[in-house]
Length: 312
Image 1: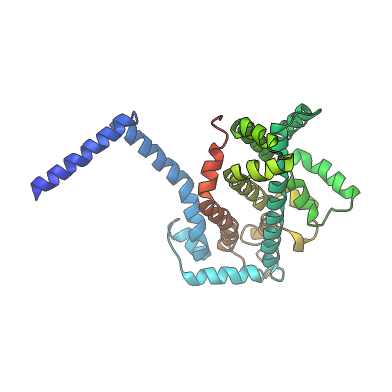
Image 2: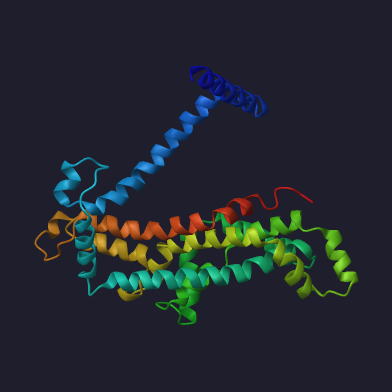
């Protein structure tokens, strides 16, 4: 038995040594890489673990129990009841609004971004360079600096305090346009386009039958990036929306945090039973959709992030 174990361990060790030689990694390099990955996992994972466990504990348990200890399942139901009791179950409206704003913006951005990137990459026309330059400038300028001009524009057409005030400004995704432009400029075979044109394909058929099917990984990446940006969008809805029933989750969470005794002891005389664990539950509700979308779209995200990295 010992001999068999020794032979098996020796074979495994030789395979590991061969694997490290093929990849240019020494034993020390492997250990350093593992330690660094472990440090980053703890750095990013512990706050998420705390967020998951905080709604299971009451106010005393948050301070007296360990940071990553579990409270009780019943406490989650109690936290949800407290959230439903705030402002006539406003959190349900916030969740519905976030879903509607995000899905609408993602659909519009993908519909707009991919054709624009294709046109900029495959066609030459007056003003093309200017459009690319403006797209890059828009990517660099902070989003908060554009809110005031957007507010003035939307005020002229009476769209402020409507869902369109949140959806339309985010439908144009400058980073997505540039990403689609880079993808088509480097990965779309020009010989294939020329052959299709000889066969009688017009520009719409070229895009529909050749360019669009090639961009499936890119579509997944763009959809995820747009979803993440719109789901966590705070400043634009905060400026554009006045009615609390139209808030999305980030603005609603800020409103909730501003009026609850959990974070403001001077409001302790109010009738609100809200505690810090209840606010953590809202944060968990906000984080969960992004995590689920990332898990299901992970294959497209990885392949889409590499799209256009190799020129055909």
